[in-house]
Amino acid sequence: MKLEFCVACGSKKGLHHHHLVPRSKGGSNANSNLITLCSSKKGGCHAKIHGVNTLGGITANHADLIKIGMKKARDKGRLNYRPFGYELSSNGLLKNRMEQKVLRMMKRKRGKGESFRSIAEWLESEGIRTPKGNNWHHASIQSALAFFAAQNSA
Image (cartoon, rainbow, N blue to C red; front, side, top):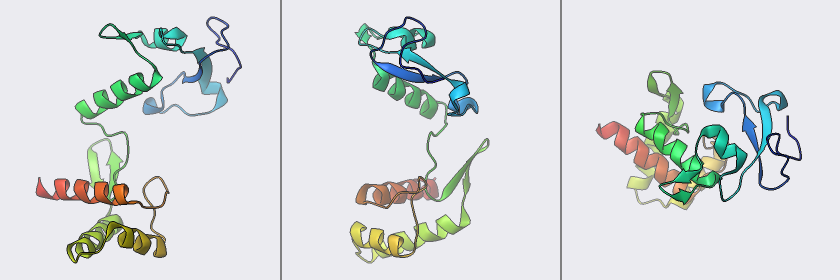
């Protein structure tokens, strides 16, 4: 449940809503799966729950903990996002046929000298969004094409 104070110590500063069952293990954002904990430059109750409050002698903040978690997931071969053109499954990446077709067209357009901006405009005109449902930008197109190339060269 989201509260205006830390349930462990009562602090009203640096509050975070902590998932009881982590999202990575199927937990939801429902209030029944959340508790409010404090976080501070010295770690706070949120860090204590995770058993982490320093990084090699340097105090870890929430952003540091997220980066650590993402690196651990990547090191274990787990992605924490769905690349365009692929679906995530327990067996790894599966190709999404429709998005693979779009990636091939993006690659062709890029090969003909079209700018990332013109490709983004084309995708928008076709109603094609990123996996998160956002508009395309230079970096997202570049990233999708680089991932596509890496997967097809392996």
